[in-house]
Picture (cartoon, rainbow, N blue to C red):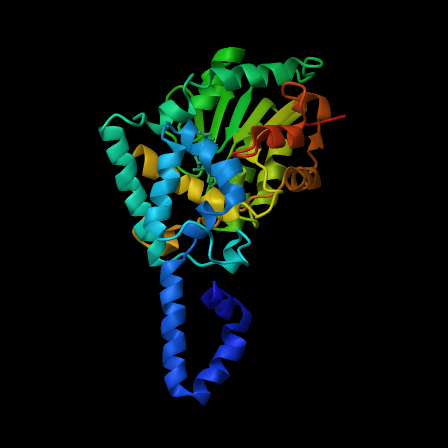
Length: 356
Ligand SMILES: C[S@@+](CC[C@H](N)C(=O)[O-])C[C@H]1O[C@@H](n2cnc3c(N)ncnc32)[C@H](O)[C@@H]1O
């Protein structure tokens, strides 16, 4: 605790002159700082935050089919302590660095999860079985409801659907079934070439901001104003800031008048900020489903951006999309209420429309 506050309070500004004044003391200080950095990192500091543990991590671990009590106990054992050491923890990458200690803890947790699954005390399942247990049927029904309530969408012409960041294509194929759409009207966009003969796949070039905008313009040449229903499921946090306006702009323009765009994201509006927690969530999937963990500290910071419900809404509106309060309602709850209700990942859906 004291060591951490020394690092935070003095930092480079005060530590450096101090070191030149007294070589012996400097050696001691650097050693202490190095050891402290080795000890903390981000995994222990994040997963041991009481607020994060109670509202997010413990429910998520139970969801994943593991004992949350066992998981938290093993985390504390591998960390070597059970309450956070950094009293200035913010949850943002700008204030914390991943270290070798994180690798040790994550690899230890991957081993622990594997043991739990091998000895039958935890459920062994794949990510697909966990994340899409019903092959996207729930989502199909959800999107169909949004497209018909409180009124039917007014877009005309043959039904066309699109998934922005479609990954394994499970979701867009579910929509294809629900809306009985032809393959040529089932658009699946991602930054890699999706191989699935039941969709029309388009690859977006994310190598630079310009290439991104250009590749979306190319897709628009044949598809502008034609899509009735577009979705994007937990993809936007992966899009870098310089490319997000192009992505929202594309979605607004690809929609037919009277079409809708449903976006699912995680709300980052609570404290501590959930950026590091959400990045660790991606890594947790490997820990639990493949019993693997990163080997380098740099692999922990995924370069993602997590905004609040209002933050996502504002960015979409800046590119012309129009928020639909009525179609965004899920079980009577708007996006912010959904996030509060869902608690652990703060998931929400938000629906935008094109046209008046
Ligand atoms: C968390 S996965 C979600 C995949 C799929 N939507 C689902 O729910 O199963 C995020 C997806 O976004 C894609 N992605 C990452 N960066 C992107 C970008 N800049 N533009 C579009 N898609 C992107 C990834 O390739 C990946 O398929």
